[in-house]
Amino acid sequence: MPNYRRSKTRGGTYFFTVVTYKRQEILCKPQSRIELRDAIEAVRGLLPFHVDAWVLLSDHLHCIWTLPEGDADFPKRWGMIKSRFTK
Image (cartoon, rainbow, N blue to C red):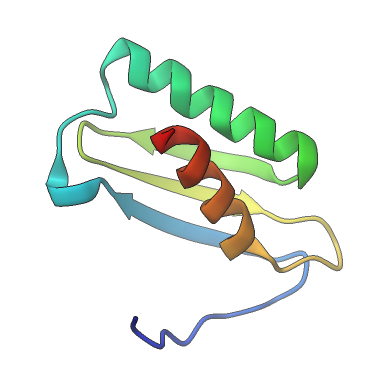
């Protein structure tokens, strides 16, 4: 696994791009949108974050999040969202 250098600013605002596996065009399908939204809301209920902006395309998404003050654990949130969405 790559060793990315990541900013870990507590309470920071972060920009993300996430791409589907093999660029499958699944994100704009109605059921996928529902599942993704449900996964995000479930994770936000456990580990809060503010969604500042979100762009959903068929094979990838872009978003900007702001984490709560004192918190910089966006990798855990993404891991939980991806896990819930793929199940």
